[in-house]
Length: 193
Ligand code: MD6
Ligand code: FE
Image 1 (tube, rainbow, N blue to C red):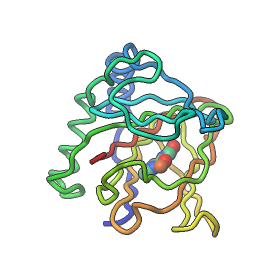
Image 2: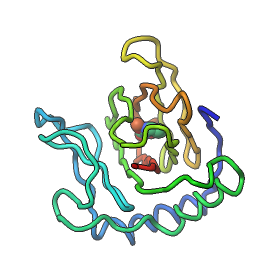
Image 3: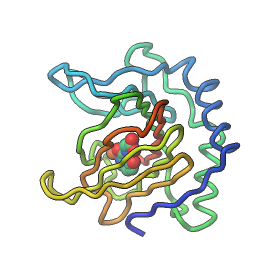
Image 4: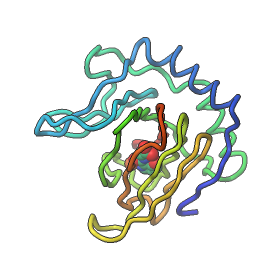
């Protein structure tokens, strides 16, 4: 199952995820703006929950055990995210041995976007990456295995699950921008090692 895209979460389930992030994650792990090595800020804000968290600053990209500004441990993966992973395992969408070690929480507003990249900071590059879209819809960009080349535009709507796995795990991809007014939250659940 290399690339999977399907709608899963109804309004009520989406609300539960948003509320949990607000109540259980943001108090200890507020949103921050990652930067490139040059110091240039990315065009979105982010935070994490789980055993590890992904950050980027003047030392580059990496996973850490602590929030970059508060130096506190990342809050635990929230109960409804754990339930979602169990659901995907029960339905054989994920393998039983998948370890949900982190969830990156990206927030896009107005002109928020994410440039073309490969997800290769993880020590384990074979475990799938599970993305959950919340908030307003937006356009995801899917490329090939080189930075250059044509890009497919994929509409990601709230409640959509998008999984990159197998040979497609290392495809270049990015996020072009949101549609309309509001905020988009993208969650990516990953196994780090
Ligand atoms: C986003 N997503 O949808 C950014 N990465 O805002 C990602 O960068 C991503 O959706 C790996 C796998 C799925 C993703
Ligand atoms: Fe990515």
